[in-house]
Length: 265
Image (cartoon, rainbow, N blue to C red; front, side):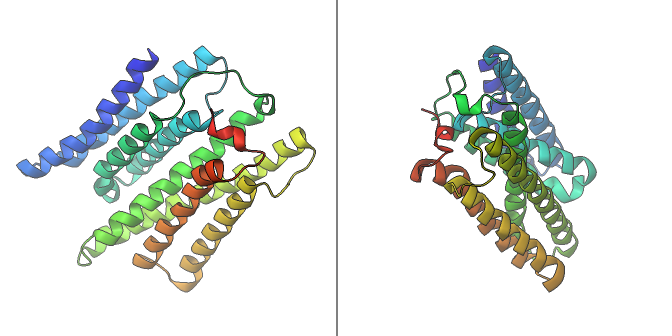
């Protein structure tokens, strides 16, 4: 069941991209609508995969790089679907690119260690689900803001209404990601105190999470008070997600610390 669900998620995310390309070639209006349906099907398949892995392992599947990445993809596509539900016209240009990002991320995850293994002692806590799911969902929303910013930069400046709609989505997804990241840092501090006896130890993961949080706080401030909108804000979202990637991947593989177990074997 697990492997079937995983393969189906690949297929449906690929269909989201393929249907858009076919629709463009044939000049069909349904190109974005059906790609959105395919993303929903892929997300449901990913949901089945996560639940199945949870059932087999007897624990939340969030203990290593592979499992957290699968959850991040799930959260990213889920964030897209939620925003699409209420802003379908503003989100239509993101449908195929969401499929592309999901495919690339799933493909990258396939190179990671995917065996279901017992939890290391440091992760045997109820805080695992709360902390990791909050941070990964926040990263998913910030990935959506990155994607919105990247697409915005390539849109024709004459498409004023569409650009404003997409920029609004980019900003709102940034806000969601920022507040979830805030909650993730707080829950992480509480968990750290429970596990290690201190709320903050300046571990590399903690330090870079704080740097990322400060960056997005400044980005939101600049948009709200200095009018850094559209292209300026898009650039901020792109560079912000570079920080997220370093915090998520770079710290695990380039620095040693209390979170080193997160890379898996």
